[in-house]
Amino acid sequence: MNAIQEVFRFFSGKTFYVATVEGDAPRVRPFGFVMEFQDKLYFATNDQKPSFKQLTANPKVEISATDPDSKEWLRLSGKAVFDSRPEVKARAFEVAPFLKQMYDSDEGPALKLFYLAEGEAIFQTLGSPTQKRIAL
Image (cartoon, rainbow, N blue to C red; front, side):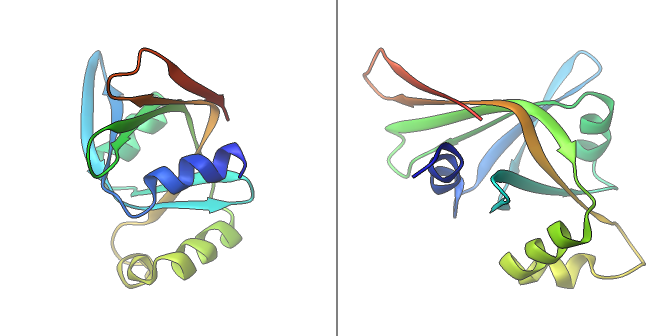
């Protein structure tokens, strides 16, 4: 299992929390979509949400999730890079058909997919003083 797959496995099927910056204040909200595509982890928002505006103004982001027992957690940080290639959007619709229902129209908000560049994943286990760090 490579680093991207390991991080994807941890986030997959969970609600996780994405932190952005607005001005000088942090903003955190739950996300649920993640996909692995072409050796990158992709996340989704839309062009009407504050998260999109915050990430375009300041691409620094941190994402966090815990395992179901809250004994292990993961922090993922990096810079959001928006990717508008049609094949990325098509793969997102394939992975999560509900996105196609929400965003496959010229009306309303547009789906925006981003991956993390210059990323680092930090795994931590409750009660352990050591961390596992993975450059992405």
